[in-house]
Every structure is written in C-alpha cells, then in structure tokens.
Length: 480
Image 1 (cartoon, one colour):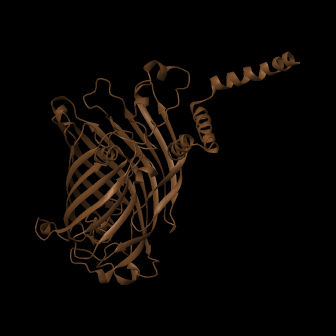
Image 2 (tube, rainbow, N blue to C red):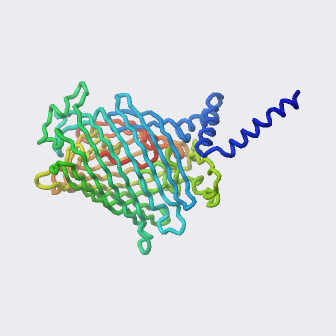
Image 3 (cartoon, rainbow, N blue to C red):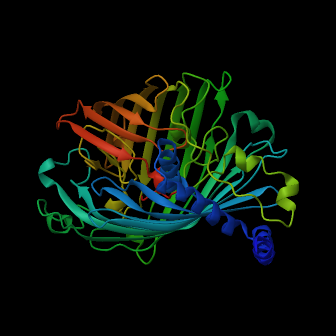
C-alpha cells in the first residue's frame, strides 16, 4: 500500500519540482515571504523578531509606516516592491505604496529607480535615474503670514493637495574632476497643486483670514512645469573622516496660463559630516547622500539597491535564462557598532520673480518645527512658523549611540531667518533654537527621533517623528 501511495505521489512531486524550477522571481518572492510570515504563528522571541522584520521590510509586499507632513500624523498602509537586474549591469527597483493618517491625510505614488553598477566608471554609483508619480493630500498646513515679522495671532490653517509627476537624474562628470565626485543633477516635474479651506475647529481658515495680496496664490493654483539643473559634489577627505555633500541648484517654476505665478529659485545646500568612527550611521548616510545608492548602508525597506546581495549577483547569473535569486533586504541587527557623528549644514534659498509676478505662498519654504517635507528647522518654534520666498538656515547636530544599543543621544543648534526680499537675507537678526533628544534605529531600519527644543521667543516644542524612509526608500520629490 505504501509503495502504491508513493507511486501515485510521484507525478505530483515531479510537477511541483518542475513548477519550482519554472516559477518567476516574483512568484518565488511571494513564496519566500509567505514562508517567513508563517513564523508569526509560532511564538518565540526569535520568531517575533523575524516576523516584525518581514512585516515592515518583506518583499514584495510589506507594511509602510511613517510621518507625513507635520500636523498630519503618522501614515500607515502597504507597499509593493519589485526589482529587475539586467545583464548589462543596469539595476531597476519599483515601488508602489499608499498610506493614510488619522486626520484623513494620505499619500500614494509609484516610483522607479534605475542605475548602473560600477564597472570601470569614474563615479562609483552613477548614473542614477528616478521616475515617479506621487499624489498627496494634507488636511492641515499652518500659515501665519509671510515674512520674518508674521504674528502668532494670525495663525490659520489650509488644506493642501499636490500631484508631482516627473523624473530626476544624477550624471557623473569624469576625468580630472573625479576626486571631487561631481555630478550634474537635473529634474523635470509637472506639479498640480490645490488649496482648500482649513477645517481645524480651533483655528480660522487661511482662506477667510488672508487674501491674495497677503498670500499670493491663495485664490488660484495653476499647474506648473518645474525644471531644475545643478551640480552636486560629495567628496571625502582624510580617508572619508570628513565628508561633504554640496548642492548648487537653479529651479524654474513655469505656471500654465498664469505668468504672475511663475518664478525662479536658487538653492545652495552645504552639508558637512564628520563620523566619529569608521562607518557613517545608516540614517545619516541616507539623509546626506540621497541621490545615490549607498555603498556602505542598507537603504531601507523599499530600496536595497546598495546591498551586498545586489552586488553579488554574478554576470552569468544575470545573463542566464533562469530567474535570478530573490534579493531580500539585509537582515536588521538588533545592535550596531559604536556610532557617532558631528554634522553642520548651511542652506540658502532665494527666489526670483518678475515685477508683475509673485512666488505662490504654498511654494515658499518655511522655518519652525519641521517644514512640509518633514525637515527640522528652528525646532523650538511651531511647525511652519515663518514662511517666505527667501531663507537662510545654519544647523549643527551631534549624535552618539549609547554603547552598541540602537539608541542614540541627539543635540542640535539652529540659526535662521526668512525674508520677503533677497537683500534682507544676511547673518543679522537670526532666530535660534537648541534641541536635545534621542533617536532609535537598528541597522537599515529608518530613524525614529524624539526632540525637545527651546531657546526661541515663543516657548518650547516637542516633536516625535518616524522617518519617511519607512514610507519607501525610493526618491521622493519635494513638495515645494
């Protein structure tokens, strides 16, 4: 009887073996992730850790969690991730994700990254291309008026939506410029913004408190064709003990059927990083080098393009007719090596509009708390507190891990100002804040930070944020 059963099962085993050999990479990824999720039903400390990592970093589907713009809460949803490696050393990764927050804000988009592995090139991780289409709807964005003298008494809110569809690229310059690691960066976006009345019960709506003269663009939001070009330098000195990331960028915002909203913007962003040990912390590497796949860290749950697993795929395997092996993100360690870094940033943004034009207020950068992209600036002030077409920021930070625990102490000092005219940007009358807090991170997992800031003239501010990297590791376009 046993022989009969075994004989009857032979065709099934043969069929299963043939299927396993002929399944696509995506089918295999689903199968492997399903097996990993099965550990969630076996209760043990090790299984719980593996289960948690699969839930937030598994491929091709995982949970996506992270902070949206300030005052809009933490978004939760799902992400679908896929990749394709080509025989000519080109690598592509795809990401589709969507999240919603407790106040009904949401973000959804599709993103593709394409780059070529280094093989004789003089710039180690380029060229790099990102293609994306992202829509976002924020229930609350705060507005106090324009300029450095805006008053807390004019605190109002508005709703903001925007679709951004476009492409950006980083193209290396070779030859004698190699030591400086210089790349041409460019982007071309279609921007489709929309303003609606705020619905915060305790605050007036911006549309009722301000008019178009005090908030240009309040009554009409045209579509924009936005292009930019610039240079990025990211050299390292003294065996990478000092790392720089400089960006010089010129942006053009061309409004459709509304030349009064068209303008140009110049950005100069100078970042300096001094790692206290041999390895730049993962979250700082992602923040300081956003335009290239990392050579020394994991990029996050939606993007493992810099992982060793990606680089270890052989040319013959990539060129073979058989599906390439699944490439999960590297395992996240519960502890890290001793980490620490000192960083300093100088950021200047100046806008140029024709005599009959004005920069739409919703595209003006802000200082205070965090800006609409979630970047901390003058953290002791309320979010979006100061807004203007011209901005200067100086920020210094110190972070150090507590032993080898995935916990670090963070200290920051901010100085900055906004202005309505470029001539008013200078180093006088700067507002300042001090901040102290702690961070949570583990391996390639994104940063979670808790910061208490003081030193301004409007009280203190406490903020807890989850890095938007958990919303996807692909390049995300700025909302302004």
